[in-house]
Image (cartoon, rainbow, N blue to C red):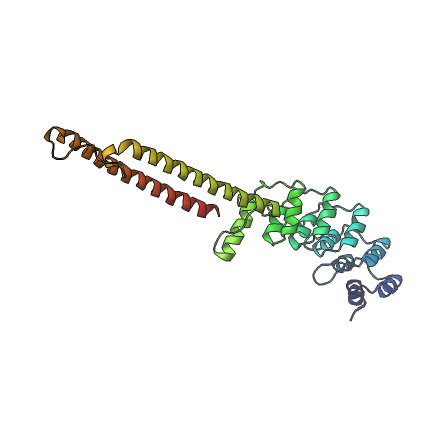
Length: 291
């Protein structure tokens, strides 16, 4: 193993004493591995703050870019190394640099689910509206990668939910399409978690609607009984003696009139029952949908 490879391995593994020895012996602090990463990048991936500080004290650049334009802050944010991110921010590094994919440190943290890093970067006034080459901002990427805790925090702290990516999708639409493609159905809701009080309010609302329907049915029944009493001839009412004489010729016209009234009543009654049944069916189906 060459001295350069051993030096880089020590930076990645966090072997502070070994790194110190190589630096005293004149190791090149800017040497790169086969992937174009310098010693300070490797130390940042693992969050070795003491080695990053040592390298910086010996002339390494805290804003150094690798072959993909990733900086130490990118790597620290991507891997959730909060202590190192705090140190780098205290050193006034460039906090909105973009890599080849347009990713800033904030986007790296949001995409990989590191809430505390996201919170720190937002407090440090990074560009929270920044988007990558696909037009996805931190909120898009949080939902895209299933980090709902980060998405909820961003929304509560004023993140724009109407921003669209290059496909014209808002974070809500992107989340819905991802859910639909994964399950074959749309079940995602873009909202804050429901509280116990909200569920109780829903139940109370449903009970109120049910009671209102009962009152309407009672009123309909009462109106129907009134029409019954006003429409049925007195000679046809139960418990009352008929006043017409069926064998009296002069009274036949009156009896005939009463019979016509009965027919009209039963036709009217049949229509009313049909309307009541239709209303009950409609109300019951509406109640089922609301539940």
